[in-house]
Length: 550
Image (cartoon, rainbow, N blue to C red):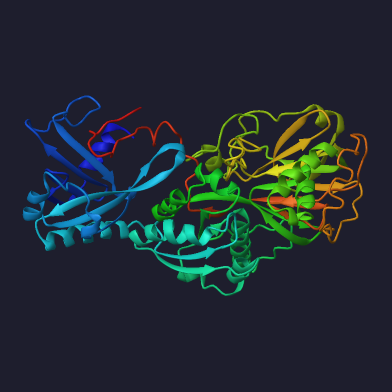
């Protein structure tokens, strides 16, 4: 933001301007459509200078953007803990009526917090005028949700989803005057089935899921399927263009990994996610549809994994009796067996995309690659051709472009539609993948190296392409727990693996995947840059003066 833009904010028509009591002093408080400002003149008059500091150091000046305010309310006596000593008598006698303005404050590690400022007024009418005027301005922010449908998974993660919502999220929604319809799910796919058939989507402004990545996947499947059904779109057609969902989805993280939330906000903090929802943030996101022949299987928003990730999930499902430790054991077992799988991968490169998986450009707030990639921007750099592609690739031409074909033996085949970052892996599987550019990063692990392609579609056919109709998950005891952990040799083809689709096992290995650009939107804004907010930073911390930092 330029200095001139700041003065435009200051010069907006004034809605309210009065003297109020704040922290042992009388301050001039002004509200316009853009900002709430307050200051105290000490000895000299406020003056403008040609420097970046437009307020002289003789004046304490603070302001809040209206877009960052959560809400305003009358202050209860027990809430008013400020100025209990020196200025309390003066405040009670002259300014006995208090109101609270709640706002968002950014802290470390991409976390947001809800902070309060308490002002005191001369009379009740003045207090009501301030509260009503501030809340009226917030109601004019059309991007903010007024009614939300909330699904809570009480069993996800450490089974604290209901407590997290009731104790940490619901009070914030109440401050923001958001009404909610809360449903505690009772079984797997409860939220999905409810969204597909029973909900009147016109009666809410968004859907919120409290749980882990599995709960988010349920909501995505329910909302996307409902949208296609209402639009009479056949999901079983692999090349069918899908209709984007009108409602945004909010995630309150309460799971074990919370990959989706971490990759879209930079943290897995419930309060931060709740504040993104309240602010009405909107982050588009791509969704992959997965088909076998002409049959729809599932949607994927984060990771499709064949080979290593598929084997880990398949083995861990057989050992559910071990509890959460089954993932560590199955991961070590799969790593030691070192199995590979033979098959054919065909993919449609995103040749018109602005980025590539090795450009070291991270997807951040206001990502230009996502903005332009969705409109078929021009490619900035040439395609990267790896050794395996040169030796084992061919090309096929279809109506939608030139497909590349790679035949070989793979340790793993992964498709990452986002970085897949999480607290345990802050960089993620594909650090430079983008949330909404209409592509997925296809990662092929061979015996000696890795290659990555940014693609719009891909197909995989295993050497033994007789698709499996049901995965054997019959192991329920520890008798076979260590069988053949280290017996597999790198040169031993073990047949076929299974696909891990966002934590669910697919019943077929022969699949076709299509990326649907910006099919859904989240209540998020992407990972914010740490150094600046837009091009400058201002302080709203009590006791500091207005300042910019380039």
